[in-house]
Length: 81
Length: 221
Image 1 (cartoon, each protein chain N blue to C red):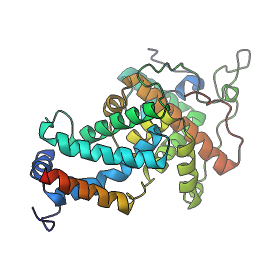
Image 2 (image 1 turned 180 degrees about the horizontal axis):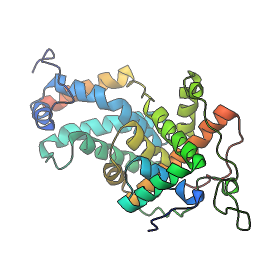
Image 3 (image 1 turned 45 degrees about the horizontal axis):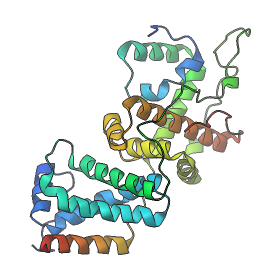
């Protein structure tokens, strides 16, 4: 892998894995070095990170009450088996 | 067994939860049911075609869990084990519904996730560099209450595989290897799908914040 990443078009494809700490150390270092000197990629990275933070706030709907009742009843009948 | 038994904490060690479930502890079952079912329903929706099917898959999963709990060996966390049962049940259902999407055989190319026109071409002064920098998002832009609806809508519009991976990773908090194993994806494909999903959502959010037209890139699975 390159120890220097010069092209922004390559860096934007790595920021998601970079955010998750899933890049090999030399590649992560190269992405970090690029971000330190590239305002455009820094903005892009910040936006991907904000996007992930927004997704994390999504809450699931509650289980429909009738389904929950059915499942508790299924549990009781399994226990009786 | 008593319905008034102490409520189980889903953060308690799996070994205790499993012991309580095996002994028919209704409170323990209620606590895992309430803690995990909504997320399971959300994941099932990414694999099967209708809301009713997704609910049936969740129901089928819990019945399978109850019947198989004696055989749970703790090689993964209990929650991961339950989710794997769910994914398998959902995939079987998707096959019956002829909605099966390829998972293990998925061929993902390395199409760019950012519109290539955003970067300078060969012959320009700085090939591969931004033509113009992305416009920053004002901090207050993401605080507006409608942002959550924009994100939720954008997630719903993702291709099923991207939505499934994003749901497991960024909403349910599973690791990459866990998500890959559950969905029968290679870890590489799992990572690509997550990356594409996030890139696409970023475009949708950018469009919301700045009113841009959506990027042309992003027709891939």
